[in-house]
Length: 320
Ligand SMILES: *Cc1c(COP(=O)(O)O)cnc(C)c1O
Image 1: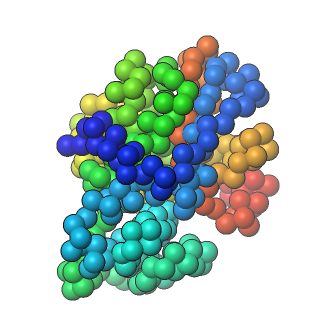
Image 2: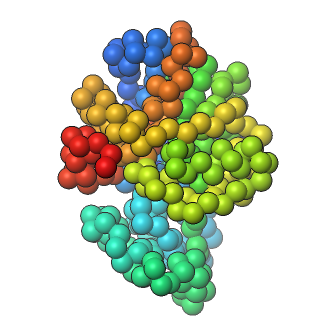
């Protein structure tokens, strides 16, 4: 099981490679919540999301032989771009398995980082089988998006930087998909700000994390219908769950409409473009503001990869 020492080691490896993203504050937000709120802006990270931290950490730990052979990831989202970018940084070949109907901009960005994109029909082909087959056939190392000790240790560096910069927190809000970001945050926050209350935030339609935490075992669900595409996971990872089940204080859910409000707020007040999933944690803060009066509150803004047309449609039209 990874520990805070692994997060510290990941931070040393990422120095000078990942951006030390800014922490943004807003007077309006502080007044609205009645607290001091610190937004850690991973939407400004390389590749547009925190995922670069974990992907680079995992790739940098591969043996020279594995690095020479290359890596493989399956993702239609930010992990694909992160692995492609990390592979380019480390001089490794990346193969990314993406569905045929993945957004053209994401396929283009992944190819733009130099990765080979292999597409498949998501209604007819099981991607895990396809990926495992390709990896075995070509001798590639499979890099999972969250269920991996190096990946979650890398993600923990975002929280480590936040607390190093602003000091101890009373509460920390982190979005929750497969649990890599939240479990890494728990390792960092428990070490650097022991009294902090840590809250995971999920989309209402995808509450598998909450159900798993209550049940004490990983609960699987159907693909949730939500605009938070980065949190459309069907279950938590085993490594993340082992850390989350002991280390999180609460898991809450928020409706998609609250994510659109968050996108609008961060664009108009903070001049930040944030994707729907990136607004989960802020939406959690606003949902719990009555409990946060006078507190110091950290928020991980996880990513900013959203097509401008979709962004515009969401902030002008809302959730359809
Ligand atoms: C991947 C991702 C998440 C969810 O992270 P997990 O580690 O799977 O919980 C949240 N937000 C964004 C922007 C992401 O790319």
